[in-house]
Image (cartoon, rainbow, N blue to C red; front, side, top):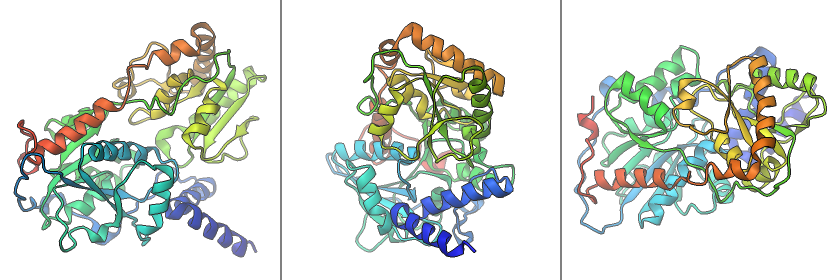
Length: 415
């Protein structure tokens, strides 16, 4: 009987990583035991909103010129090194740098309280100064918020249910989230959020195209960037290792395809070292050095040991592709219109989504690395930064709140 042992492990994970860490391990176990492929749906039934009943919030008087805004960001519970939360916090930093105040309202969905995540946020994203509160504190007496930003589909439901609270409504859309699930309950509930009438801020053109085609309107696009401070070339010598972001249970990251491709690649290139990071992958069908969660500095050092890396994504392009290029690594990316919409780089090794094609693309990527060298690869993204995206989000919020002269179409008037 291993229940006591497993319970102790889960309690330890809860203390270190909160409920997202526990959920990740449960999802991984379900994937192993039952073949579950979709992400869990963290949304209580009482928090679900029907788009047909969404009301426009009360008008808040526009602040005078030079007034600092208060912006509330409604978040799902973060986990260590979460890429989605890292992108959100980049925009929070930009709004704070412009002199505005931000408040992070955390929605756990599993009954956890926000304060358990505050230390995690301070540790992993130390430049964020925003106060961390529970989502139940939205609309607290004496708290006036000029704009709210939903940051994932469950938080859009939460924000839509708070229609009596004044404030502009934005929706930061990093991916077309219905694609995270099979056609079913979660798919339908995620899809309905794009009918709530919030002003959409999309990360990249793939998501903007999906929203424009399916729901009309004109999303505000925040262009993809690359964190040049964190990812750069440290090693200028040729590198032969390859790296893979392992994320079982997250179908869009192509974990199964990556494993099959790496197995074929290893059989043809047994001397090439393989690294994985992210979830601690177990019982791989090939020899690999397995890494778990890594800080950006640790990950950059690992990138600098590699010549090629798998950056698979079947929805929006993975940020890993940009990180790899900045560190002088050739990314292998599954080829489809969505990924090409936001990644135009001559050094990418594109691959049809089959094991043999991805394995062949890895071999081409190593050859490209030897030919171009890490410095040329890194130089190809020198001009790619998060600055333009941060300014797009900041400008949209300030404009809607009346601090800029140009007009943003109000949420209640969108199609």
